[in-house]
Structure formats: structure tokens, C-alpha cells
Length: 109
View 1: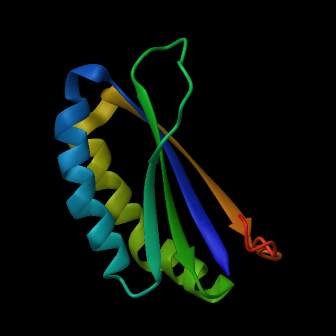
View 2: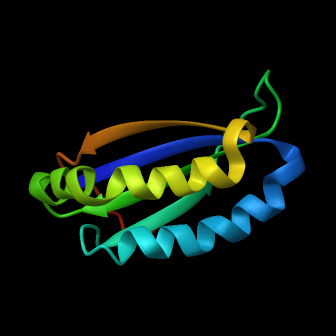
């Protein structure tokens, strides 16, 4: 399993509009068929540059799914965000490969 992580710092002045936009955007990314799930999280750190920081984690079953997303959809979808929010957002992307998941074995947890 692979995780395509997009971390975005969004200016406070467009924060609420961006969150609304992202609800649709995330579903659009999922509907490409390349990912099985997504999580939207807020990064709990105060940035020197201000604004709010979020992480969107898209789950892909295979490396090929991720590569196909880059090849066929990524640029177009990224451009839509940039056209709408321009210099009010800063994004960077990270790819992660899941090695193993762990769960508690003690029933009291």
C-alpha cells in the first residue's frame, strides 16, 4: 500500500473557502480510480508564515496506481487548486510506502 501525502499551508483569509473546495477536490481525486481512501487532517503546529496547515493522505493499492495518477490526472487537478488559490497556498507532496501496520494486542487498550 502507498500513501500520497499532500501537505498544504493555506492563508487564513481563504481558509474556509479552501476547506469547502477541498471536499469536492478530494472526491474528484478519489473518483479517478487510482486511490481507495483519503484522510484530511490538520497539522497541529503554528507556522511562522501564518495560515493553517493541512495534510491530505490518499491511499493507493499499488505503485502503478500512483504512477498512473501522476501520468494522467495530477497536473490538471493541481492546476485547478493553483488557479483558485494561487499565492494563498503552498503545497508539497510526499510518497510513503506502508511496510507494516501494528495494532494493540492487549484487550485493555
